[in-house]
Image (cartoon, rainbow, N blue to C red):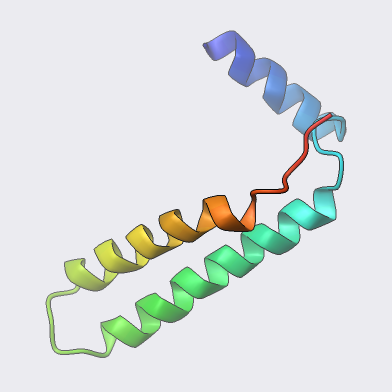
Amino acid sequence: MLEIGWFSAKLFFKGKLLRDPMYFVKQTTIGIAVGFFLLMLLAQAPIPFYLPITLSSLVTGMIMPFLLKDFKMK
């Protein structure tokens, strides 16, 4: 398992892992922005801070597969 991760990391840093790296960056940025925006909105509510973190993480994790459904690797 570690060998696969190491091989993927080497290909990623050489620029040979992703077919369209800008698509990956764009979709990941959209997901991060949605999660951050949701966290900022929920953090203003008078609730314990662990709830906004948990909810924004859950929502971000749920939307990432939809954002990266057309993701292609070499």
